[in-house]
Length: 333
Image (tube, rainbow, N blue to C red; front, side, top):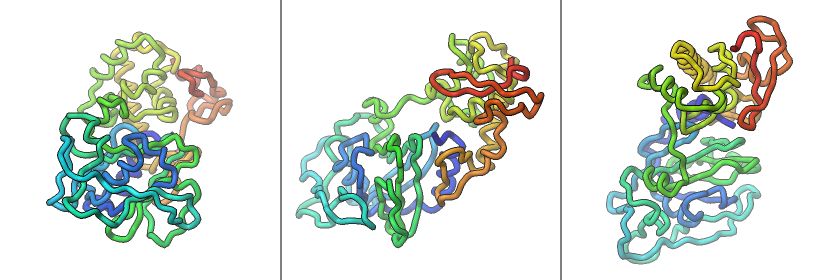
């Protein structure tokens, strides 16, 4: 699964190309990849919206949207007026499955408002967000319209400069959502995430406090997105190895000194991976379809039975929180 460094790489690649662009329409070949609201409402909600900003939160990609037409009001309140006109189309894109799309023909009268599901999804304020979670095999790529559509491309966003933002996901564990942050949280379509481990404001004392409250393994805490956002199996193993801490160790037994080592190793492991554009240990590719380079520099992840680079002892493997975990019994305590 793409983790913080991989998602950060994709966001950094796409941000200068997407901010300021308008999504003219969206077409879906696998509608259930949209988890909120209904697919028909989703494609209507993104049509005609300008991308104001793009950022990462944990493993999520967040695109802040505003209407490209200042006369159009997007609101969470129920207002009178015609509902959006949605059509199912049988148009084909390079042999893709039939798509769901938004018609270019608008009914007479005022511009339609955002779909009913979004209006009812939450009363909280905040920007309208297009949210992308890559799941295990999701890929978000910006391509020219003439590029043939790859198999497993489930969503295509048509931009006003003629290019397309395509979401591809062979295993279909990813998801697309749209709504305000408050609305998505209250509808339980997004989890409440912990602090960002590379945020300068994330201090050692905060990590220590969170560890001391948990009677579970260090590895399980690092995988818990509500405890620390963005860390997954790869960088949990790597960070614990750099800190010299055994993944099976109970979090509430860690001293403040050891918490300081883990704090530093988390930041080091993640920032090094960002610099190397992520780890392509499986299907991960960046926004241009290129592999990352961090997989060549991993210390323990995926190396069970191979010698530890520090002491030479064969690395051990156990399962923690349902995930394969690799560590050194000599170097990690």
